Image 1: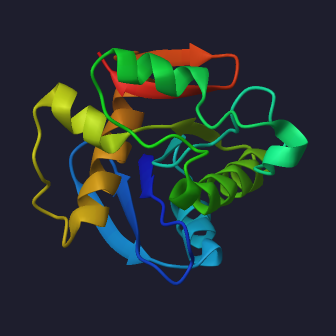
Image 2: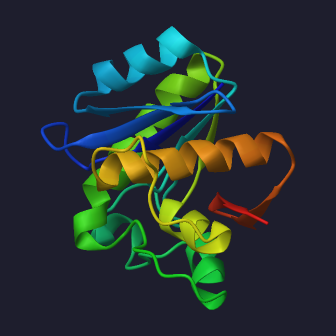
Length: 173
């Protein structure tokens, strides 16, 4: 069992969620952290893949430039960009809330013993040459399916970790 979460920055917005059992997807649209945690606790997946930055750029403890300086992009983001993939780094203005929520959710899940990985579903879809998933009712659920499939591939050793000193993004081979 694998979970994919296309996390929204704010709880009032739609978060896509997918559970993949190796043969099919169960998709849903959630909002609050408690709903996401409830889904994960109910299914107890071996890997939870989250589409959101799950760490801050190297040398940062927060997003206050006076405290930590102007660095807004992680080494792992730069590495993925240099491979020709497009993404928004954690320090960009509209990504800050998403990053903080992702970090908080990752920490809550890891404390409960879950294996959590950071994924980028659009990159996964591009590598796997996938468009959308039949069970998905919207783009958030489709991205959650791609995240769950990436988690499954990761569990099978069919992924690559793009790793810097400030984080790891998992992509299919």
